[in-house]
Length: 187
Image 1 (tube, rainbow, N blue to C red):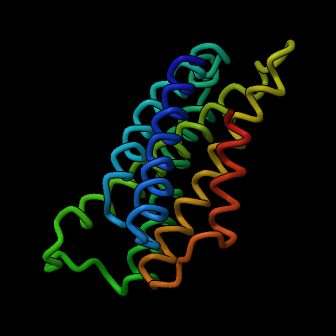
Image 2 (image 1 turned 135 degrees about the horizontal axis):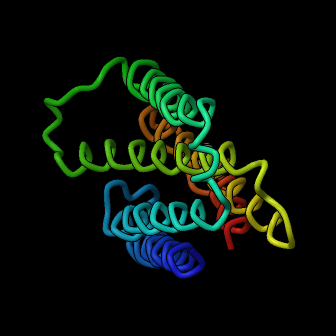
Image 3 (image 1 turned 60 degrees about the vertical axis):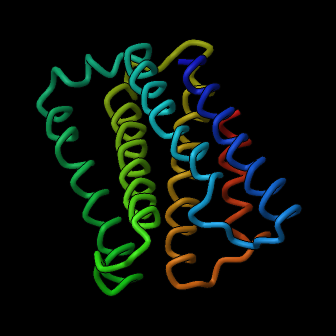
């Protein structure tokens, strides 16, 4: 768990280094999206996903799946998160999804971030919900912080996608604070 969560943080840090170091400071590009920085950001998502799955094994989430409530949560939570995210990001922000955009890389990242975030948020929520009764010992606070970090990251990425779609994002706004808070909590 620690190795994959840490590798995800390193990948995110490399993406941020490219975003700030190369694009913002050297190339004077304020919002480089899509860019090479997205490689680090997108790479972090599966690494964190693997870390969350590993965390679920350590926290006893599999025991929660033995109950009917746990199985229902496995179906209901992802469905609610996906429907809400799709509605807000695609229907509200974009007015529908336009596949005629000539920038296929942008379309790829526009799909990769919400899908990755929904998967991570779903996994984090499931780990929390299924293993809540089994938390204990000295790692209880650490597990809460990791799960809270992913919730904050979901809202940061969601807000970033929404703001860049509406072309209202700028460096240093409250969304960057959410990203910083998420990385701080996860670290």
